[in-house]
Image (cartoon, rainbow, N blue to C red; front, side):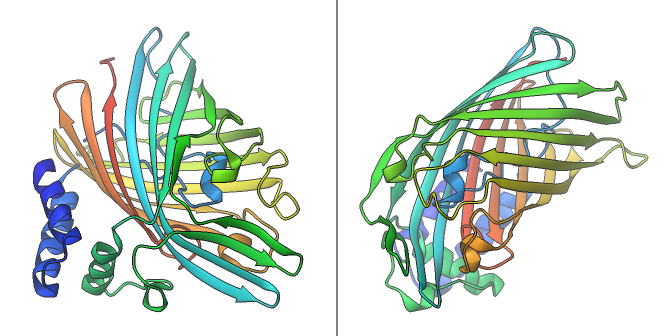
Amino acid sequence: MLVTFLRHTSTLLHGRSSMLQKRILVSLTLSVLAMSAGAGPLYDQDNGPLSGIYNFVDSTEGADLLPEGRFAWSLSSITSSHAASARRDDELLVFDGETTRMEFRLRYAPSERLEIGLELPYIWHSEGNLDSLIDTWHDVFNLPGGNRDTRASDLLEFSYVNAAGEQLSVVENSNGPGDVRLTAGWKLGDNPDHARALRFAVTAPTGAAEDLHGSDAVTVGVGYAGDVRNTTADGKLSLYYRLHATWIDEPAVLPDFYNEWVAHAAAGFGYAAADWLELRAQVLARTATHDVDIPTLGESSWILSFGGNIRLGDNYELSLSVGEDIKVESSPDVSFQLSLRYRPGD
């Protein structure tokens, strides 16, 4: 099924007829919705050109911690297409391009209640080639497309200008390591049907801020996570919720306009259609990252993610999802995520 997914995407990118694109996209979407297994929420990293540099929390950082002495790892890739432009008085913002973020995460439980982790990201910014696919996606499902109708396809421009002059301009493809992130979880209680944990994170400024691979700032996060299982008699429905706050030290990019504190909230559900198959839908919201009049930076963001996970043997799982900015231009227009996860048995 993964091969089918990749073939469908490749066909769309090579520009077949509009009708064929729509048929293939419907097939692709049904494939994603049919693929899904039980390691919990989907990966929904905020992958915007500026919000992404802060390595904000995502919904996979939950309350279901590892057993003592065990390791787990995941390799994730999220590709996001940006299509936002706005003018407010003396401010002008353009986010047009694509960002791919690949992450390797390693987790370990040194004790019964404590879990620690390491996150190593690698970032690509480019003009990309997903515009044709995403235009068809929006046509099929009658979704808004931001500023896509006003600009040529496959461009790269991340820019912000105000009355004081140019504050941000990225127009060349780049790639490089992002900011390294250290995480921790502390288990609260022992209820098998309602796991709860405190979550912590610290980000080190190891990525190049001038290329938007990092922020050149330390960030510190603290949060509360809950995972609820067996909410129905058959045990097929699971729920989760997250509350998180991140403190940001002065960054290199737009240092005069950033918000020192950013809050996140997320919730979602999963439905186990079979022992190896789980479908998921979830919503993530965050407060504004910057104190400006442009809504893309100066207002809250809302992301809807749907898809799921498919179990590959006893310890491996493949996760696929699509993320959409349900508040238009508040986050990447569309994001496609693929993850391979390893978790030991209990």
